[in-house]
Image (cartoon, rainbow, N blue to C red; front, side):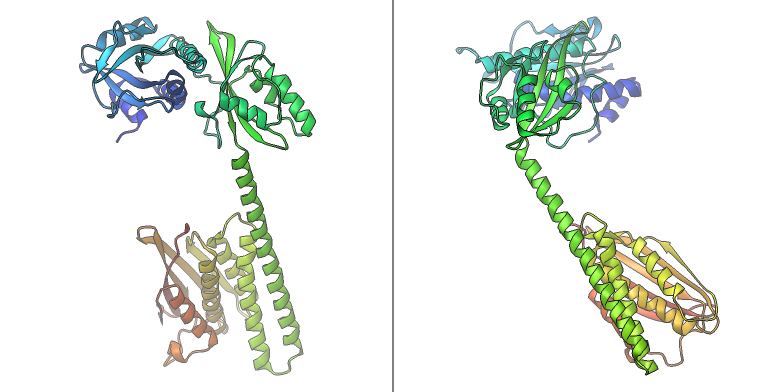
Length: 493
């Protein structure tokens, strides 16, 4: 299915700025649908086909009108007159008589989407006609607010370009709480959910008839909470911004929508949502992440302490073979510590292994005991992976590079090339193919991995743990090439 922008470009001659304006309208029209208890359909003129629906939204606050998807349909001749009239004259047009749809009667209204004095599209509002009962004050207020917003759309005054773009986590909706403010910020009406949210902040008195800015200021002063610099303009309805109020008892997210007529502000719509539980869970996650990072930091420190003790022990051992074994242990412990150091700096249990590979490669080459110069390079990208995979992979790469330095390049120096390819081997699962090539003396005659030293056996075991395979072969014109594969665990559990 094509996106709204693609549909607009295919069906109209609107420019990028006009398409963005329509996007902003559609981004907020769920609010209008909920306030008006009506379906909204966006129509664009397409020339020979008349009008085509390119977007449709249903209300969350009442029964829907259209059960089927309207997007892609043409308007039909009976609807064209009100669409064309609204579009040409840039004014709201009401349908003459409620249209019967099944067992219900539906009233239609056409609202032009206007920008800089030009009609871009038309929104039709489809409302169920309910008879036999008196609407509640909530319904009357909601419909009044919806009417104000549709009038602003027809006048090119909504949406506001001053409003921050992008979604906000915990942004309030109509069902969360609605407050209607007058020009001075006095509460004309507050929905039951809005009143409850304000009470949870700590206010015990009435809400309707009070100046909301005064109520919130008193609550913040009593709780010693920090005042956001945008708070004043939001809770008075002067600017189309978001903010959040937090006291010792609750946190409430607020969004203000100034209501205007002929360019002058007349009142404001305020949306409220109690986000206390959401913020509590976020704080728990932050605390958990900080704890995990601290654990990795301490593990890294402990491993470095172990490596230092082994280094001290190595200096006191007279036997050269034992000293070499302890030095190898120091290097391996340091490699594991490097992974935990990277984990201690992140926010989850995954790491960017490219950084670990580069640091490990430089560490092995820099401390290599050889009279000749050894160069190294890394091509390709390992990408992000789980901590358990990173630990095994770091050990494998470190051992293979160390072997290349000690056995292939110690007598003549040379170059070590590490190349990696990462690709999806099945849905949601990536695999690695890593090749480590040196231009040294090459493999010894009769080389067999199963009969090699401890490092080679460690590598073989770790590769098997990663569900991969490894092979050693001569490189051309001389040297050794080691290639292994690994199957990575999915990043999300």
